[in-house]
Image (cartoon, rainbow, N blue to C red; front, side):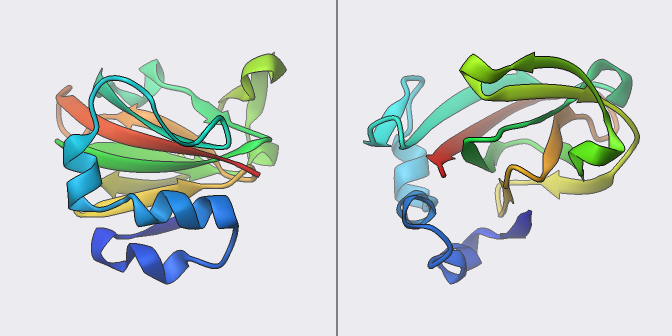
Length: 149
């Protein structure tokens, strides 16, 4: 997992070529141009999309992880609490290999707070619980990048 400031995005280039391509698009110009349609940066290997969500209490959220993709989460509007833990510490309750999605219930993990000046990269070993609320439920807008390993 990488949790850092948007201004430092390019410091994390060199880990994986697809991640490099995605990180180069974590910039104000690209993020402002992102509409509601998925944007393929390199076909199904690297793409981005924007989602509109409402944050929720922890007991209404779940952990997920992916085996084939790295996720980059960037909140564009609002604040989101995201918890990170390892799958080994959680209870798997549903698998969807065709969608590269594995769902877990579990404890609190490590809380990160995503605001428009931060980003989070979740690798396959990072189960992540999204849509966590801070204070009360709020609408958020976020960009998610998917990078195939």
